[in-house]
Length: 474
Image 1 (cartoon, rainbow, N blue to C red):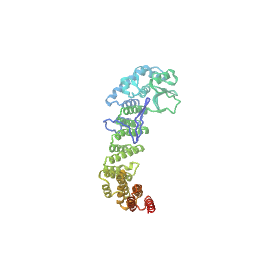
Image 2 (cartoon, rainbow, N blue to C red):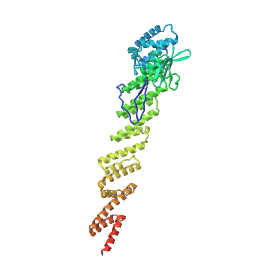
Image 3 (tube, helix red, strand yellow):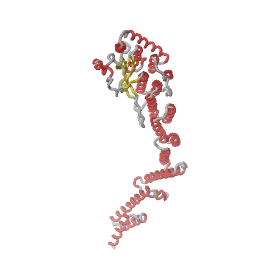
Image 4 (cartoon, rainbow, N blue to C red):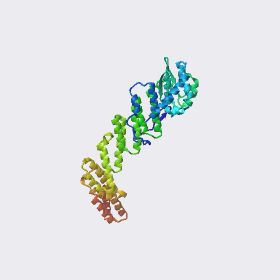
């Protein structure tokens, strides 16, 4: 399973995740994992937002502590008072344009791709497309304009409705009012921000978003930044907050994905049992879906394999009992793998006879499984005894096995090979004696070989050759 980290897409930063068996490294913070939204969001759930609500939510979304929110609200009202004076007596279109230029003369001082927080913008003047669009819309609304927002795959910007016309406002530049009509905007915008303006006609790239979603982009950008720094705990908390703010399916999907990314670190730390506990709680809290099924399968499989590899066979069987149902193998298949692994471990330390004795004591395993493992370790033992071409040791071991095991196809084939190899040995010794003229000794060797392997065609042919030789010399 792999999980890839969040990726910046120009000014609007979206979180992208994936789950797999191989997981990329993540670093988590010491903060406790969150299982509910920040209570600060709860008073705003399920109701239409007024201007004060939007101001407060934008500051909460920025991570401003409760005891400092009032001071930033007052600072924003102070900027509003100055903006009202700067646009007094203007038409709505002139107000929308002059408001943007007013902000860039003082409040908006420097563009930074990553700076999405409203408090930081008010403190330092540093902004990106999201923070500048939020502040612009708040002030424009307070000045009586009808505002909106648009997101694209790599950007976000404001809109104002003037009469029957919806006008884009690229808030990252003072030239951004109605950008499609301004040549100087196009000459400067890409250099300033690094991304392209999406004109109104390109509806496939443009998505209209409401006030909650625009403020939600602050949270999404913070999630991406935390993840970029290697923090996978804080984005979980922020995903809860986003879900409470927006209350939309997309936010819920992001909640699942943030937990998935957090679980990357647990997987890399081999905290499989703990990860499964997180998955269980996630499913109990938010619900089970295909993503949690994939996570559970990955962690359950890793837990079983880890315990099996460590020689903790009782623990592996306990994990199978609890978690096999969430994997792509049946409990019976897992238990078969564990049986084979444990028998291999016993064979490696105590030998073949002890392994068969242990297998005979297994009471809760189907006989067919036991027979398969007996066959496997016995074949392994036979191969071990035949190392270095010691065919006689292999043959003697084979003949010592119970008749039922000797009748297994694998051992029947092994018997044929061993008989042939041993017959070759008698044939070669016979041929050496004959070539040396030591006929009596050759005949004695051949007699022993035929006594042991009377059906060997090779030795029968040797006997016929010997008989012809003896006839010719008597």
